[in-house]
Structures are given as C-alpha cells and as structure tokens.
Image 1 (cartoon, rainbow, N blue to C red):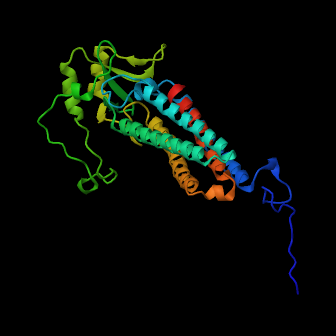
Image 2: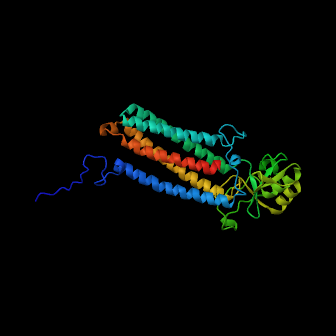
Length: 328
C-alpha cells in the first residue's frame, strides 16, 4: 500500500510552521521574537521592582555619581559616570556593527559579514569585561563606612563635605581581632567572611582625635545631598550608635546606602551581563560558521539576522538599566 504524503502548501517557502506565514517571517525568526517578548517582560518586572523599592527609600537611596565614579588607570580621580557612559557607547556601537553585518548578509558579502561580526564580538567582550570591572570596584568599595544600630550607613567627610576613607579616620589599637565562625559560637555567621580593615573601636578612637572630621547620614536634604551632622552630633552618632565597619558592598551590607540597592544592582546588571555574555558566545559560533562558508552554501545569512535580533534586544535592555541605575 502506497503511503500518503500530507502537504502543507508551504514547501519551499520561508515559513515552516503552518499554512500561513505571519509577517512573512521564517519560523526561526518568529521563535526569536517570542523569546525576546517573554524576556522583555522579565526585565520589565525586575526594573519595576527596583523602581518601587527606590521610591520607598527615596530619601536615602545612594547617589549614582558618588557610587560609579571610577575610571580605569585613574586612581583617585573623581569621574562620575564617565566609564559607564563609555561602556554604553561601546555596546550601542556594537549594535551598529551588527546592523552592518545583517545588511552585508542580505547582499551575500561574506567578507563584510566576517568583519562586522568580529567587531560586534569585540564590543561585547569589552562591555562584559567593563561590567566585571565595575562589579570589582563596587564590591571592594572606596572609602568605607560605619553601620549604626538601626542598620543605617554613616559616612565620614571633612568640613568641606569631601569623603574621607576609613583608613584616614581609624587609629590602630593593640587589640586582638578574631574572625567569628560557627566553631567559636556564632552558628548563624557565614564562615570565611573577611574581617574589615579596622575594628569599630579603632574607628571610634580615631574619630575622636580628628576635630575637623564629620559624618553624614543617608537622609537627603532639600538640595538632594546627604545630610552632614555637626561635630557634636557626629560624635554622638559614632560613640552611641556605630556597631560595625562596612567596606564595599555585598548582598547583606553596602557602604553606599541601603543593602537593597546592592541586591538589585548585582541581580539586574548580572542578569543583563549574562545575556550579553551568552550573545557573545552565540556570535562567536555564527562568526566561525560565516568563515567556513556555511551560510554561503545555504545561500542565506538568516542566522546572522536572528542573532542580530537578540543582540539589539540586549542593547535596548541596557538603555533601560542604564537609565534606572545610573541616570534617574
């Protein structure tokens, strides 16, 4: 008995998912659009949660210009947002080179596709490396701060309002410092958590001897700046309320302000960085396929176009992340 072959009416056409071709797109491109839509909803939820949390702590949220003010090889130079702006430019430029690669693919120009894909990969690698560098500085911190009994962060400044590092405040005392672990009584303390550079007693003693040092609290004044206390108020705050030294930021403590800021920063920028890293890996695979002539033999560079959709998406998401974390 001869088998019956069912035909869909789409043989030889771009769409392979049924009798109708939505938007005249191939099956692969449609699936990429479905993924992008679902991922956009995920990022939207994360950024909305960040927005609600910032609104709740609007009077004490860290000031981005003070947190992200580093630039590679320029130690001690206050460069607010300069490096983040450079990262953003590089990522957007990589999106331009991806557009050029897709356009060259439509014209079946293998050499140009190879060049522009290579430039896109380089831009992505620079961005991921830059984001790792930002994380390193955010984790290690710059000046250090003190946490009070209420969980608030207190930072040190001079009479001009300029930040002062913990190392310039603390006075080294002849005391033995022990790292608390589960084995010596504190079962709820994470093993291996490094001791801060100075103890809280050393900071208290050092602060007393510097008459021109003040502290500022998280609360913002009418000008949008952190509130600086008088010398008497500063002494009372440090002597009566300071409980520990905080250096840098992690998921539980943050020298820049509320720990929630660090939690969102690590999660959202890390999630986006994972997307960029994944895009770089996929671009590298497509790049080598271009070199060996895979798409020339297929007479179609549609795979370059599909990965281009993903790359433009991660670029667009970064614009929103950049706006929420660094500009607003």
